Length: 504
Image 1 (cartoon, rainbow, N blue to C red):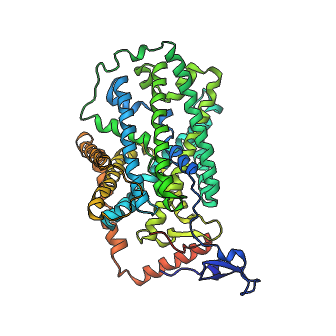
Image 2 (image 1 turned 60 degrees about the vertical axis):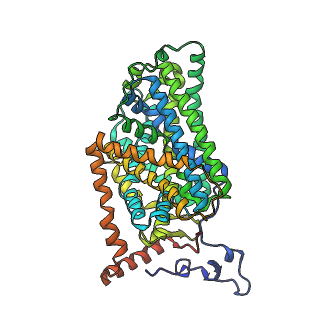
Image 3 (image 1 turned 180 degrees about the vertical axis):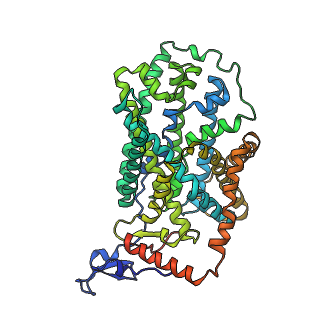
């Protein structure tokens, strides 16, 4: 598909094909300006600190503050709930370590998509990005964005109910701001993420510290006989697992931006290990603090556990908690959009999505088209009433493909033993993680056949889509002309060009 030359987009500059840079029109050809040597590529601006902020800032969203009761509902006791939180943290660490090996061996952005592509080929990789594009990511972003809108307005309306339309307008503004920042500057996006991650950690400490003080003073009545009448069953196990793993989801986001990480061989494993240690300890202590203040019945009855906790323990200061929850959700929105836009960017570069999505802004060096592609569907999802059910039946799809990506690590250990592996984990870690994911996914077919059936149906649409959009080469001329015209028009409007090169 043809694209617009850079010189057409930047009329004041002349394109130099040898350097993929730009020479101002009033500059002599023999004396190119310094800008001539600037390449149109994604810059390596993700440092270790920024990588940690991406992972922690995306993992810690609204879940730990708003509704940690999903695990308790399906385990029944304080003891089993804390065991499940710990188990999900350890399992997430195993998955994160496996992704650290994959990220340092396969030096491409795109995470799950790229790893499945390398191990199992283009068909399964396309299905993964197809489901992510049409349902998973718009719905996930809409849910966390609605939580942001709800909690940023709560201090203004307490104790009254917030008008739903106002929540959705505020949410739309929040999404628009996040999209704008991500389109404008990688550096500003990263700085915002670091600031919001700090706010998340402050919010968790506000809960943990007073909770631990009460615990050491002897407030242990909710921990007596912690395993009595535990209700873990084969029916409830997958749902408890999904609740826990959803709260920890985000450990894979640094792998979406591998090509932008400074010294990835060192920084990816370090960022993952530090982040998972902080999050796991923080989550466990936060839940302990909740149980110090609230009984299991009270926790299950609460609509927003952190707010209930704050009202009981922090008095007038409790008004700060909804604001911190909102900032936490805002950070998850920012980290998720920043990371997943790279997934679409790489999938387009591989020929699995429209060509325009693999282009970069000529001045800002951001994947602008891949960032804004989710904006219309995400805003549309805000007005779909049953988004939470949508996320429930799509959870199994996420863990199916993550388990498949880690299984690809095991397969490549056998198929490509000579592949450079700067960071290598013991084999039992990916084996245990992949088998656990696939077992839980299979079990969910038994425990919740309706939702998983719907999820399977949506996933299966990716197979005919692959043959229609990717394999079928003899498309009508009018269709090819239309796509070419649309690509050129969007290039001019968005001021984007193909990237010069990428890492293999």
